[in-house]
Image 1: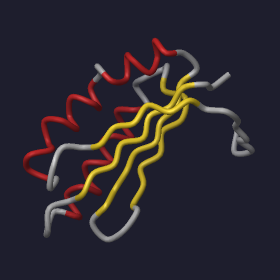
Image 2: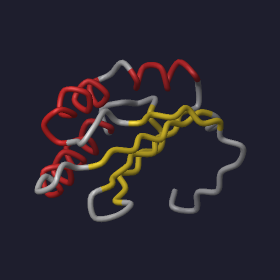
Image 3: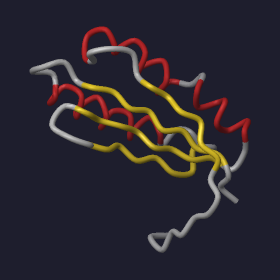
Image 4: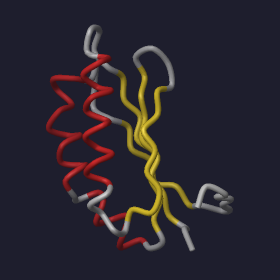
Length: 101
């Protein structure tokens, strides 16, 4: 059962919006290599504000994601693409409906 999640929010520097969208497409590909990442969404919240929501069955899975390739790429790209460091929140999942599967 999915119980753990993360929500990352970041703002693109002016003119870097397309580069952030491309970065998120690469993140999608990397997420497919993480068996413990059960749900992964790239989000566009407004013209320059983006986010990622991902969810896990265990705290170990969440921790593995935080120390994995996607997190490393996010932090490495932050100075070039974002107005500041990403905000990353740990979330406890209280309920889930997924009819896509």
